[in-house]
Image (cartoon, helix red, strand yellow):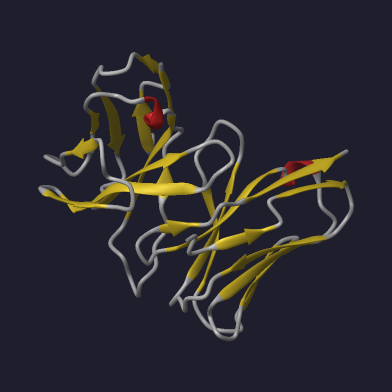
Length: 115
Length: 107
């Protein structure tokens, strides 16, 4: 199993451009997540999905959009990129929450710079 | 306001030393998790603690969940350079992560 894969690994955008960060998991997990990690900080949840066709906002959703048309894929869309979106983006997946806790499996991250 | 406060923020120690890092909150949680993140990679789960007062051991790492389920600690015995990384606590309530403790173990 490849686990959680993310593309691209690195990207530089100009202000106002848009792009899609791709995330795919092959573990048949129904929960998927997008986080951003700013330098020296922990992770902040952008959006999450509990299954195909269902998405919900996290702590910092502004400026982003997501879709979940299949169990495997959970792309993150940035519209009108801004310097404040410079960060490392992590996708994660997990099984259904059981007794309130679960293990998230993370991808290797996408390092995005907006100039 | 940060829901999960971790301390210290940075820690640099010599190989063989012991250390403890802390994760504190004013809120009560049903469970807390600890992750380790190495440079250029995503976090990897180390442990989940779910019962107040619970102690779990993972080789040289000892995790404790506070009796009131508001705090947790991670103790590393005889640290090794391979322990170097960012240690994050997290709760599955709203998927909140702490700010992390960046540990560097010098050979």
